[in-house]
Image (tube, rainbow, N blue to C red):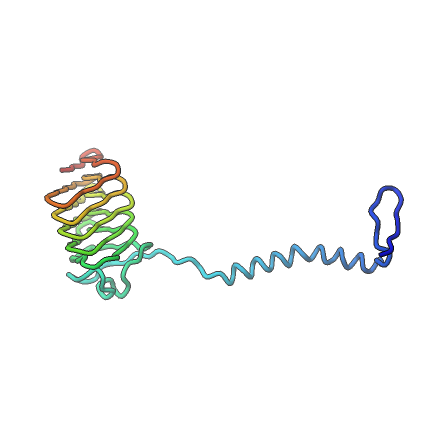
Length: 207
């Protein structure tokens, strides 16, 4: 290709490049960032939104955790908080999950879990958050990735009875955080990654 040399150290310019061609190339260079921005925006619009965490409430006096009808039509997922403010949820199946479990979430309310088999995996369990909560385990595997709280807020009461199966807590067990907590082990291993804390805050009680 023939090129025309330019004095003064400037770059060589193709001989056939006209002024109109140079202006067109410059305009395309200016449009390139805009086109890339529009492309990025289109990609974001086409990307499906991330699943949003929800709070799912227990809605029957007693029933199996695995039935969606007992949760108002939707069983909790691993990103959902599960709240039992009255009644008893029976854990009998494997693969039950939620993010945070609240038994007795509100003052004056109470919730119970009875676990006889299967498995339950949660991030954290609040047995007696502001009200009264009770968790009775005679079988199955209950796994917490963080802490177990019995009697979280002032005036609350939480109890855990481990009669069988296995309990694994990847952090600590706080028995009586601001309220009153009772832990009763009579069977099955209780594996704690850190420690058990009894009566952590002022006026709390843990046994």
